[in-house]
Image 1 (cartoon, rainbow, N blue to C red):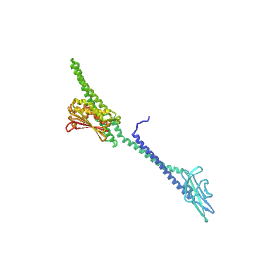
Image 2: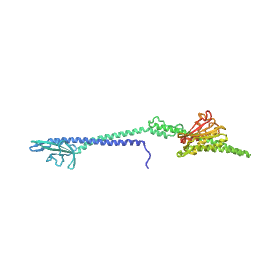
Image 3: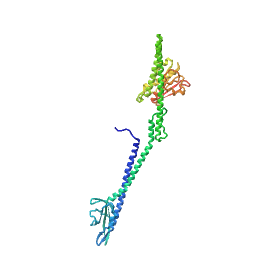
Image 4: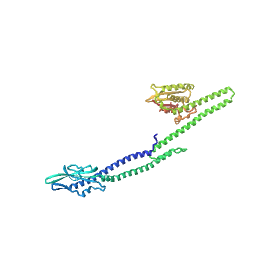
Length: 455
């Protein structure tokens, strides 16, 4: 199976090696082409010089043309590599005066012309030129051709190209060595960062120091430290929640245990019944607390993406919540009033969870309202948002406590309750992409909870 492990050092080296290798190949090809062009120019110049000297040696001998080829002429194109030299002097369109008869020449007039040919099976480089010969009022064109094998040219190409190739390869090798050394030095901060991340956490805050890191790594470390802050805050909140939950559950359990012990010692049936009634009340309180804890856990862990396409009519949700709490309100002579506008109040979300959130807000308003007062639920749509307001006529919530009332188990007064209702409501509303605001229902009296949900 293909490994998914990727080395940053290897990938960086590949990004450098591949372009440098391509550059080296292109540079080697260019230098070889330049060396060959230089060698060709030198060889062609030597051939042309020899052809001109050979053409100068052609003269009239009576009515005939003769060519005397001196050794110095051959030495012009001779080489230490032992290249074979071929030549031919021929009357244009006529007989060969001197040289190799099978050496191909070009019947030209005017400028010299270089070409490649084969003589006796050997590849040669040759040049042909013409010389007009004048005698007794007549003109005869003489074609002079000189050729040489390629050993000296190839040796010259190698002598010009190999030092350049060695220079290119040496430069690439030195550059790669420096790059590897530079990568090793520059990647050390990453290794230190990895060591810091894998180090055993201390008892206190374990944060990564970004002082000596590269500028590109500092935002990454800052984001990591910020994530640690969030995790630490959530962990502290969870520990506090667990401790508070244990304390809240332990209290009714302790009370229930005491009531059981008291009931066991009683012989009077009426007192036993009274104790059982008290135990039943304690059990209901504990069951209600556990249900709220489960509701809070459900609100925190629910997959809200499943509810994105579910339409919820808040008019029905509010009506059911008010109907469910009407009996509790009537016991304290509290009037429940509902005010809707004609516009549709449909949002996307989970109907059971939104019902639980609004029920907790209405229950909280009833719980903190004095007897004989009024609790009002208003709902309206503004643009693409739905506003649901729950107003009571209780003592209100001081501004400095309006954020803390959403903390689990926090109670702003001594009223009976678990302190989880508002925490559950805010968690559900937040998960639906909304928010809860706290204000005053009336100047210096009552509280106003406003739920804002996107339609």
